[in-house]
Image (spheres, rainbow, N blue to C red):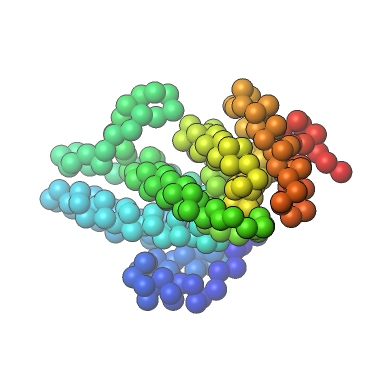
Length: 267
């Protein structure tokens, strides 16, 4: 199902200089399903491609254009959970774009891949800087989270960027595509559930929706890759489910997670 993103959202991004008119026109056409994912990928990456293939070394401009592209996609991730499947399709299409010959140009950086091999980022298969930027946003929300806990009746809907960025990571971890099983995403899942378990009832209004997103979208995978933590998480969510300070919805969500970590669905 296509995400329904209003024109006003795109207009605000252009007005705030958070995206270019071309980016917004392309993204709107893609999400409205009047443009193919391959065409959208090609148009959105054109500024980077032009910098990467220039006669002179324009790596600084190349990196700036990369960050501009990733920033608007991460805004979509954080603000529109309904768009997550289409964003993944778009990222997959970008990874399939023809490789760019950057011989003689400054490296875009190095990383250790999931096979423990140190190598340079390549356009486009490695999505240079995307995962670094996404991780930066993720950890900025961890900092936000530590300030968002207040002594009050603990309620919450989970309708915030912290929940949505984790929901995207969970979907990417298990979706049938090039990011499936990615170590970075696995690490984020462990840290998110650890935070929820350690915070207990005090942070349940922030952390229970996040943990629920991970377990609903990627529960079987998490039980497999983090088996040694399953008991610890289950005990923590059991305590949260019995906390009298929480509203019923949060207690029920915590109880549901206990069931998911036990391989049992509550009726």
